Length: 323
Ligand code: AMP
Image 1 (cartoon, rainbow, N blue to C red):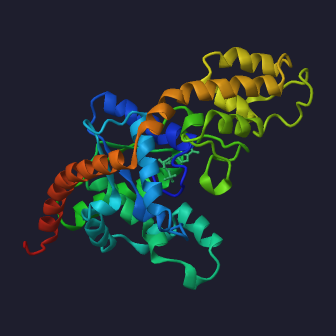
Image 2: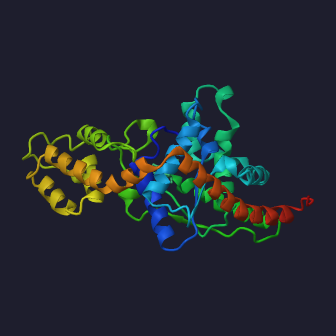
Image 3: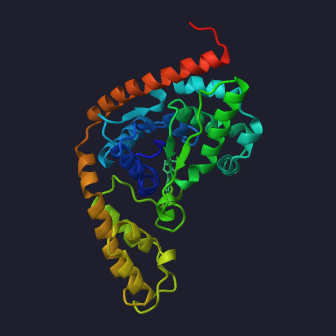
């Protein structure tokens, strides 16, 4: 995750990625959970809060259940092998693959003037490929929006193998939540939940802040009175109920039949979200900056071990002189 916000991660990050990370860890997978601070620089104008943002997102990982004694939790810029592999991959990645990336095209259009468009924006998927392939993973658990980048990553790995006649990299799986609501969680306005749309509920939010946000959420526009039929599929509050309330099916039926009002749904939704995140938020509030720094130091050590092994294989495959 990119540390782009002082509030840390939002419910979309949790549903698309973090929830899966915790499950995979608890199933026994070796997890490498990275905070992508270099990636944050591609869109962050102001870096004043970057270090603290990095701490905040790490708190989310730990509070959500990533256990530093089982999983490596680390910051991208602390493991320099990411930069080295990025440079080497940049030598074998065709420019056309990068120019076709949907995220690049979108972001490029948002930036005015060629002079302001950083190389890093175009090279983003190459760095991301280095982040992934350094750990030669079985799979990468992410939200739906990351699929195009993951595709390039596997292509770069295969191309590397072919060019240098090696089998260093194996194709990895995309571990995207099966449930589409989770894979692309809607924001309060029913667009994709995203920091750039200002439509997020953050894990770090208080119960009152959560309540205020849910009260402002988008509901069925044609449902004005309680008795008007609702369309839960298009209502942000009903989408959250589906995830966080065990009774969602009954609530959806009643909403459709005009037996429940939007305010009743919002009240149930606020309770369900706050109840689900209460233990996570309590753990989060108990973590200090120093705790996080210690965790990140240990995590970087674990990550460097595996990253170092991969780099030895890569340098040797490419014919670089050993130091
Ligand atoms: P980012 O905020 O771009 O660093 O994303 C971190 C992770 O959260 C990635 O795996 C994304 O796919 C995932 N993600 C971001 N927004 C959403 C969303 N609205 N729904 C589901 N997953 C998301």
